Length: 103
Image (cartoon, rainbow, N blue to C red; front, side, top):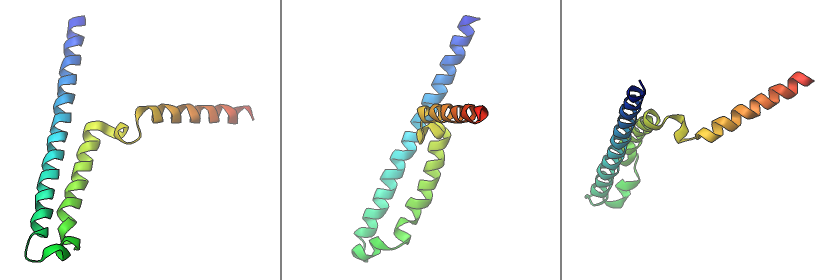
């Protein structure tokens, strides 16, 4: 039975590594494609004034929102707030409840 749980842990870890790798590939493609788009717009006939228009950033913004959701899916809320923040907040609320119950 112990080998079975070790095998489950390995499969879970392998799946997690695959999802992290997928996120980093997505991030790399995002940077390369959006860099190419911005560079091609900057070097186009319109020149640098097109660079400051909304249309120049729409792909980057909307794809960035999708990339952020992908990051949340892979890393969860720990990506932003961290596990230690969650533990500290739980302790803080428990201490507050304990103080309130004594009053």
